Length: 238
Image 1 (cartoon, rainbow, N blue to C red):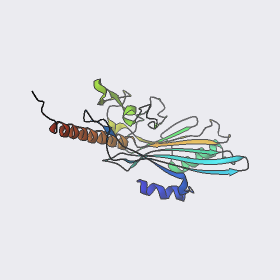
Image 2: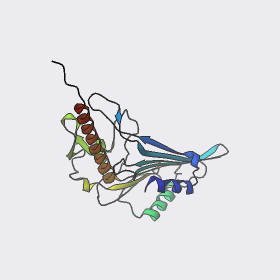
Image 3: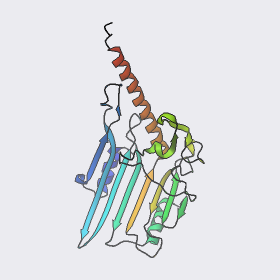
Image 4: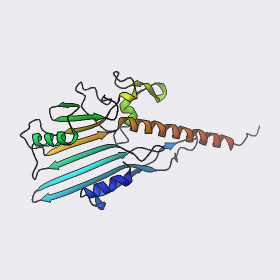
């Protein structure tokens, strides 16, 4: 989905336009002298939420949607959803059954966690959990510097990613990495209320490919900027 397709879906879900926020970003680079050069900015993330307060209780439904960067930009590659309901929550068992009715049998599951894999690959490339669960998204905190490439590949000398060396050694090829949908029900018991449920979706392959293409584009812009600066240099007076 594109941002243009996502926003109407959020509004149809009952989220007002004043509760939908866009976050934009740009990549920085340097020509060796000028360190403030940047690419054009692009839409990186949309956050949205719906809140209902009934007496002293509330229901929240919040979304964080991530989009791939240019040049292969504008595609939805990650979703984080948190459903909080202390008004009239259904039980963990009811929530589990509703998910299975909608998405079919799980690919993997543990107590309170349901995981579906799709999109060609069949491995969770983001976790060492032997059950195939535990899905996370890149951090939005720039101080952590934990992007999608950090979650998939190892780095070699000079800080470059080794595209033949995966963070988890059992992975040998990006094509093995599945897209995933994972729900955490917040309870391990079927008869207890699922008052806080977290859902995470990620398209690993598309996100990785888009990020690599973006890095390649920035490297090209950096090389062009250096070449342009060198070409304008003045010869020293000797």
